[in-house]
Image (tube, rainbow, N blue to C red; front, side):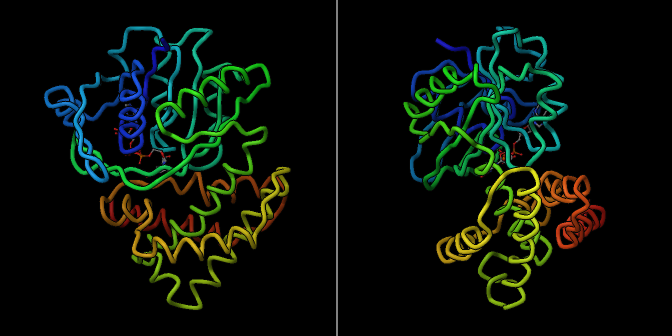
Length: 306
Ligand code: NAD
């Protein structure tokens, strides 16, 4: 049986840790948040939402892990990825596979500084989760995962991983070209997250004004133009229609950047979403004024609030 570590046991790490453990896998959570570690070590991981449950699951700081890892599932926030990777070296060997399902762009460049490319799998997930308090995670709604090994030689492990995720009810699909899924997710986040955070608004409120529609359309257009330069083909109309139709289902929702910045006064992943578009666009001399402005305004708000 694979020895699995989840590196970053916040909302998503707890969801994956819970579901994989329930499917009889050997899973250890790694995190640095002392209160959360203490709560799970003393009372187990509590799950609320569509099901109520409590499981025993090992959790420790990354530095304390001793057994070699067969699989590491990364689930820090984007700006925490590098500091986490630096703490995992002692449990990685040449066989250790590492999967990244973080939101945003640019993670492969960071991971490959620490892990050989043939051991890396990249993907995107539309599962969600929310930590309610230390040791307690709320799970609701459906989701899925698209993933692919970075090198062709990693494909057979990729297929094994799909089976492992599916046995845990995580609804995973192997994708022969996962980059459009990763960019599409970044584009949806790039359109809605910063807008809701800056306006201190939920999705419905943004779409209650024609200015909201205009702004969202302009941001999507910039993502699609830059993706095209990177040989990733996205359909701006399809993404726009998706965002608008999603607003009818989850309009009351405050996206994660609103939760991070406005509700919890935490740094955001903006540099890996709109900010990443600005950076990539510079290589091609493409102008991305909307993404640039959103990135600057979010950093300004971070400086004001934090
Ligand atoms: P989170 O902030 O809830 O969890 C991150 C955890 O990593 C925290 O508990 C933190 O203590 C830990 N951590 C960070 N750096 C560390 C370090 N160096 N050493 C030890 N522990 C460290 O984040 P999340 O909401 O679970 O999101 C994780 C990723 O998944 C993000 O990229 C996010 O955008 C993406 N995502 C989140 C959701 C969601 O619904 N929450 C949905 C889809 C994708």
